[in-house]
Length: 268
Ligand SMILES: Cc1cc2nc3c(=O)[nH]c(=O)nc-3n(C[C@H](O)[C@H](O)[C@H](O)COP(=O)(O)OP(=O)(O)OC[C@H]3O[C@@H](n4cnc5c(N)ncnc54)[C@H](O)[C@@H]3O)c2cc1C
Image (cartoon, rainbow, N blue to C red; front, side):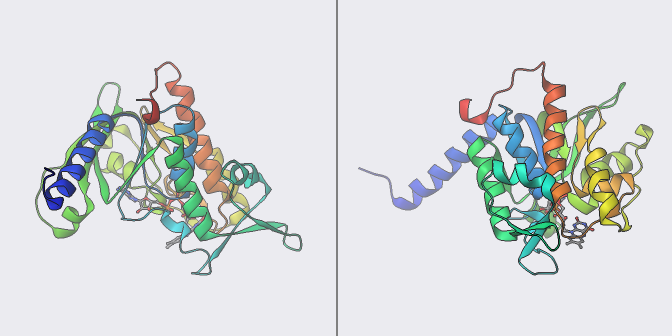
C-alpha cells in the first residue's frame, strides 16, 4: 500500500533536493546572480559541458531585466548583441530611425533562463552567497559560502555551508558583492571596488565588455559588477554589454578550465 500523500510529497522533495546538492557541492563554475550577464554566461558554459550552478538571492531570476527602462516593458540592444539573441531565439524589432533593436524584457528573462536550464545549468533561487572559500600564497578562490536568503532576512544566527568550484563568477550587478568580499575580508590582495560613474552609454557599453574577465585566480567578473569594480560609466537600459559580457566571461573561464575534464549536469 502507498504511503500517505503528505509523506510522499515530503520524501520526494527531500530526496530530489539531496540528490541535486550532492552533485552540485563540487561544481565546475558557480555564477553568483541570475541577471542578464549571469544567465548568458550560464548558457554558454553549460552548453560547453561545464557543470554550472547559478545561485540567486531572490526567488525569481532576471535581475534588473524585469524593470525594463523605468518600468516600461522594453529594453534595447545594438547590433553586436543580435547573434546572442539569435542563439536563444529571443525576438526583437529593429527601429531604423534610432538604429537600435527593441525587445520585451519578459521574453529576455524567460528565454535566457529557459535556455540556460535546457543547456544543463542548475539555477537555485533563494540562496545568497555571503562569503568565499579562499586559499593563500598565491591567493585563490575555491568556492563560495552560502546561506538561505530567508535566514539572512530573519536575522537568526545560522552557520552557512560551502560549495566548491573551479571558478566563481561575480554577476551580482551594481553592488559587485562577491568582489567586495575579497576587498573587505582579504585586503592583502589589494582589490579596490571603485564604484560606477555617471551615465555615458557609448563608452561604457564597450568598456564593460573589454574589462570583463578574471579578477584573481578562481574569481571572474561580468555585467554591471565590472562597472562597479573598474569605475566605468553607467549606461541605462541598453543591455548589449550585459549579454556580451556574459558570453565573454564564459569564454575566459572555458579557456582557463580547458585542462579540466568538465561534466555537464545532464551527463553526470
Ligand atoms: C537602481 C538601478 C540602476 C540601474 N542602472 C543601470 C545602469 O546604470 N546601467 C545599466 O546598464 N543598467 C542599469 N540598470 C538596469 C539593470 O540592473 C542592469 O543593466 C542589468 O540588469 C545588470 O545586469 P547584471 O547581470 O550585471 O546584474 P543584475 O541584473 O543586477 O543581476 C544581479 C543578480 O544578482 C543577484 N545577487 C546579488 N548579490 C547576490 C548574492 N550575494 N548572492 C546571490 N545573488 C545575488 C541579484 O538578486 C540579481 O538578481 C539599473 C537597475 C537598477 C535597479
